[in-house]
Length: 423
Image 1 (cartoon, rainbow, N blue to C red):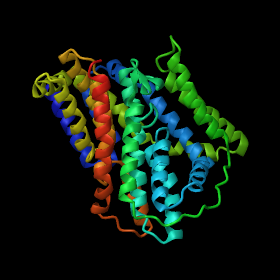
Image 2 (tube, rainbow, N blue to C red):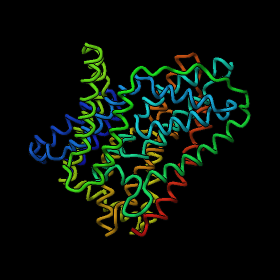
Image 3 (cartoon, helix red, strand yellow):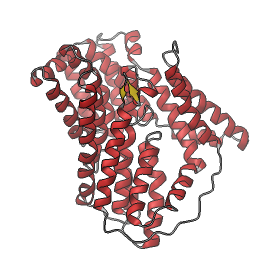
Image 4 (cartoon, one colour):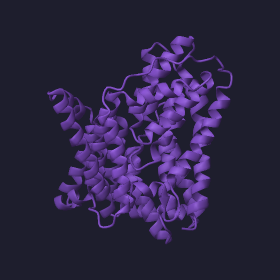
């Protein structure tokens, strides 16, 4: 167990120190667990959740096609036609970013919506820093709302055996979706206060022209397919992954036939985030290794002792520790590592792990909004602003990010305790 713990600590330290090589560090660490005999090759391969990997890859590809079709940009244009001033523009674009990110990667959401905000700021001759930051933190917020909203959601779904509809209604109770939306409404109200002086009128712009409706159909089909699969009994264990990958293949075939070229197909395949896929592939084996070696059980026992067997205290520790930790490190390896720990804590205490799962996911997803480096969407938004020549101070981010995080986390924290503490 000591050897496995040391390997894991070194692995995590290296991933934090040289994030560019995280996938290869995770894979090398997995190889160490195999060579050392902690895991056999079949055991290591069995630790990998291929359903999760296929869901992520398929969703990424479909999202790439959807962004290229310009459908999200058209919807944003329609929203802008309905708002009276800059304050409501910021809130509306932020809410729209949140809705989009419930189905589309957070970084992709920022890349889609930030240019719209920049165009508005240029027309009105206003500073876009606050507007872009609001869009970035809102995109992080909604990632936990649905099964396909974020990699961490897919990880939880795969580990806990949750399907698409479980995020809406779980064990007869309102699911995580409603906790996230409660936080979103609270955070939107906060944005109205923060930007209360931005009352310049906004004129509508020319609507974006959608170039291809097939990706929109594919996205809707994916959501419907996941819903139907969640309602049917006896479906294959990897049905969600099959649905996402099948629809992606269909989309690529249609695009190739339409363009009579493979260039667009190659572009979509190239834009899939293989670093994340390889990172998760390696992490699944690493976590499997430390679980088999007893490290996860030892950590779970440690947390249980700290909490004194008090469910409320342990839930509080997991939620708020996840917020703080995710403010500085990537939440994907953190959640992948903590899921079995949380399950171990629940088993030790003899309670249902759902409350702790939801506390972990909400804290890890929303904690990234505390700092400029806490989430990829924040880094992307700040990068866009700097390329446009705008200086983004830490104080500019903290003015929005910290109160936004608290406004989103606290309602969700209370919501989960009310509905799941007695499960």
